[in-house]
Length: 239
Ligand code: ADP
Image (cartoon, rainbow, N blue to C red; front, side):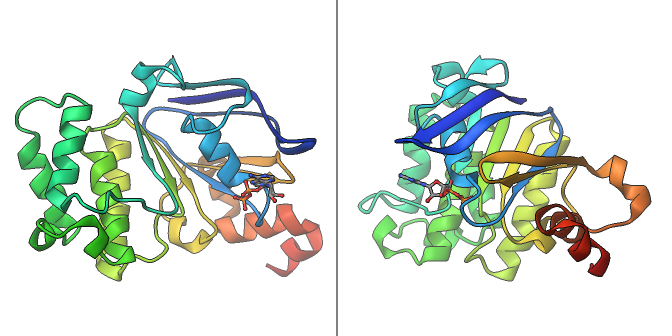
């Protein structure tokens, strides 16, 4: 579970996140959407413990800056940053040591690489990987420790169709295993089948929190709901 309570982040005097409170329950997929500059990346970096902020963030009940929280969090950043001089397989070995994974992780690691079509690249160095391969490696590294809470920042950008299909399946499997999943994206149609909750961020604040089960009667797509909220009723009528 993720809980955010009155999270505020300022860059100098500018408030990029303004008093944000939200919860993503276990076994739920939430999407964080909003126009460019709304504050999504800032919020995700706060959640991942990469930026100082005011307010509280917990991951599976632990303060996000604690080791317990970090051990339970999988974070796939928008821009992958593999180690240039480690091979694909050495990345997984590094994660296994850092997270003190129990023996048997190798089977899971190979399966992850296979699903992401990286197994035949396991001896390639980080610097030899294409952008899409780096993205896949980043996903494999984040999921190897079987996280309880996962943040994907624009996960589908740059992936080939096979990887997009696999990744969507992995997201559903995470949800079914009881993990909380938060996806930040501007590709609304890509998460149309996945979301349970949607948080629409505008000007650093939550403009709307939607639950699919509340909206299903209205049969509006996430895209239609998004435009209704970000561009007002007129655009909603057009949608
Ligand atoms: P989004 O991910 O929704 O596009 P960001 O979180 O990247 O939005 O940015 C939110 C706002 O914060 C923008 O107005 C952006 O210019 C500003 N911002 C982001 N990073 C910094 C920074 N390091 N210093 C100052 N302002 C920043």
